[in-house]
Amino acid sequence: MAEERDVFLRARGRTLSAFREDDECQWKAPFYFIQGADPQFGLMKAWAIGDCDNGGDEWEEEIKLTEQAVQAINQLNPKPKFFVLCGDLIHGMPGTPWRKDQEQDLKNVLKNIDEDIPLVFVSGNHDIGNVPTPETIDDYCKHWGDDYFSFWVGGVFFLVLNSQLYFDSSKCSELKQAQDEWLNAQLAVAEKQKCKHVIVFQHIPLFLQNPDEDHDYFNLEKSVRHELMEKFHKAGIKAVFSGHYHRNAGGSYKDLQMVVSSAIGCQLGEDTHGLRVVIVTAEKIVHRYCSLNDLSSRGIEKELMDLIKQN
Ligand SMILES: [Zn+2]
Image (cartoon, helix red, strand yellow):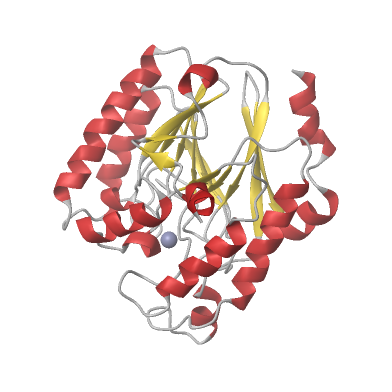
């Protein structure tokens, strides 16, 4: 059992044990990774019965979709460097009845990922609560590893953030402050070191389309958003990848791309269940959302894979 647990607990000590900084801080060659969001075991049933707060006692559909995602990823050749899941792993909020079973069922699916493809977890509002507390965050960390951390892959610096601390930190202000201080130190590293790119993962998007759009459930409050965007821009961050919206969306702020990916699980718009393929070359970050069906049957489009070979 020890090995199985390790797959889910690689984020420790504010870094990811799968990648050693000494080996990974230099640019080598173009690579790619896979981003997924919101498997959210339980939402499809809850949504279908129109009770998102108390529904969600079944998640067979989500199990099948996540299995399809894992199988599609395992078939890819060459292999992606990692598979990041941008939050809302399960639907059951802290303290609700089906949470434990949803977590276990998700782990049972994810443990089948190819052992050479590290899983990277990002905490969502359903994972730690809309108003997180030290207890809910601690509980998340016991199951999925640190709620915020950084790691290097092939000369690219990745930051995973706990966006709930920017959404509502009224019950955990010390933890918010700790993440802020840590983030400032990380951004200083990013500014100073010669990383090819800096990329952020967080569950809640900074914004969905426009940096000045109004605040609602699906984005961050305007002043918090602007402070973060400006910080990110100054540190040379090129892209922020998020989920939470269950639709594809995105926009830009100066040279920072905001990328919002739809869900593996429940769709709230017209998109299909899918994953985003992200290609990182020396010059740019190119990404495309692929339906699970396309990815399973055809793999990644040649045009995208050529970007890895060319450089
Ligand atoms: Zn969410």
